[in-house]
Length: 228
Image (tube, rainbow, N blue to C red):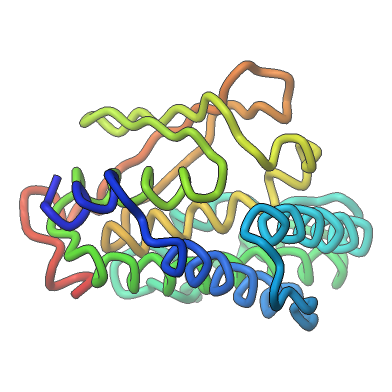
């Protein structure tokens, strides 16, 4: 873990925490195609609650419009070499998995969530000078802690969330939609790594479990050229 991340683990300025949450709030609102609600002057804890309620409401609306069909596998499609930030033409069947236009709209929302979070992850990587996978996972833990999420990750890429603030607000389906943000954040931080959940607290488990795989082109080399 580099010195910047170590220092931030000891003390993270309140202004930085708020800035990152507001950026996440804005990119999430844009992904759902709506205005971000007025949050100026809210204490941080209330801002976090506002974000949780907002994302739950917007995801539920998107699910109703999409008939409850959730696209999956965005991290594999978008993180492919040369395709970061957009779905490659070879992945068109991913969007065609639903039977009607409303389902494709939901898939598009997930794509936009991923893209916005990817850019935030890239910026965070530059801020903390992320140079390798260990740095990326440490920076992710730092960000998630500010969001009320207790995230642990092993060097092998086994990710565990023992406590999640958002599990009090999200259903399992909402959680699956919002997971596109998680995938994008991890990919942006790591220069294209892939995060895949295997279980969730919102499904009745005591913890969330996920596997993180670094991008094959980034294994064993510095990430500074990828996120710097």
